[in-house]
Length: 387
Ligand SMILES: Cc1ncc(COP(=O)(O)O)c(C=O)c1O
Image (cartoon, rainbow, N blue to C red; front, side, top):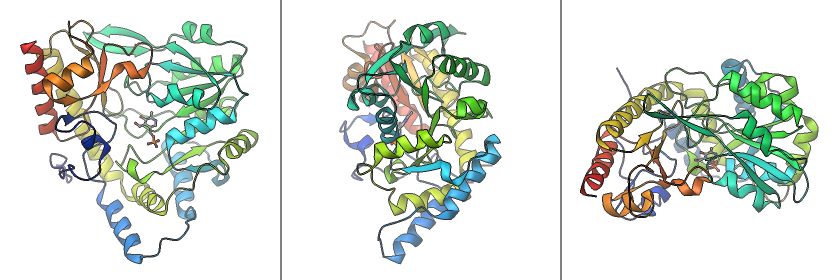
């Protein structure tokens, strides 16, 4: 019996929501925030903090740092010391700071595509060169499944490649990479002496009871070359509060990271800190139920796509609330994002923006009440039928 009713969500129209504003009247199943309110303890902590009424400069609560260290120990048997945590106002900020901190101007940053678009932009933003290795897409029982091709990965590396940015779990392909896959990547990074920025923002959103394995926990040699980025923002649906953190256990690497953000990157705002602490301390019951709801939404979505959207292939996400739909077999006029926006009134993410391997795809966010998902899929079915 669920105590949280994820079938209900407040109206978000007129709330300055990026997701609900960008595409006017279209049903928004795009950018990665969910339509659910944050857990009750988070709301209570924020109310209490606001009621205090003084919003001076903040400092990370000691209790938060202790909570994060305890969380890493409990979830992953990962011994993280307080001084190894660097707070950040956003994960995308962390990706950019990592690019700036590692190597020199013109050095290469490797990413696996298709991938969350800021991975593609960050190297260029910071005077680095983007190089890409495509993930391998295959069909498993008619569903789309992605794996890492170590040979393609290694072939992309040149003497100028200094940083590898991993998305783990992977947005948009929904993979929670397992220990064997991660070990193969780690071996390659050691062999070619790459620093790694592992974006693990979706680490709490593993479905079906899967367990996340932080890359840095594979061993001291890999931890030494890792910048791990995590946040409560996807997990507890508080991305608008801008709170996240890096774990960097190599002091020299951490020093370079801190130097790269100095004077440019602001501190995390005080409400973000308050929400983060409350979420990690008191949000686990809510999260357990959320994961069940998301898994049920995913199963429902996959079933509808297979039965009712002929020619479209879909991933079965192991993590995240993002599904990745291959529309290349459907003969659509123009790209599928524009087609579904105009013909179905459903706003999705355009796969082409996710880099090589993304063209002809769309990403669909199923972090919403089931009725809204049903409505969107039905509008997509009818549009395809009419077409
Ligand atoms: C893999 C990944 N990294 C980073 C972000 C965004 O992080 P932030 O809002 O903290 O910049 C997202 C949001 O969708 C994401 O999926």
